[in-house]
Length: 144
Image (tube, rainbow, N blue to C red; front, top):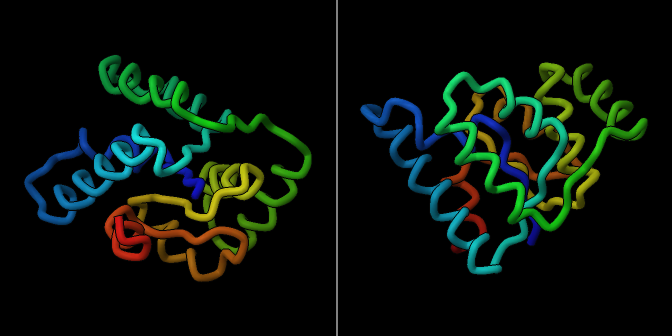
């Protein structure tokens, strides 16, 4: 099963862990990454992740996240199809970068798009090509 983690999902363990939701999502995301390391899940990467991570002001976070590119089985580059799909997702109410992430996940053949962004999660039911969920929901759904 192929998954795509957006930038906010990759950054979740670096967020303030004083809130229970944040801690649980961080643990779930780390669990997903462990399954990727074991080969039980496939990771998809994209040029959008490269860009967003490159502007992260925290070098330690930027370096930790960029290493996951090496674990990816697919790395999508910008195509006309990705941009067209992203424009249609923007019309559904997604922000441009979020739409590009989702479009890349679809292009990469992902079954799941993992995010901790409430704005994306709120639009997830409108997206048909990939299942949009938070890391906790993903673990429950696939029994990891």
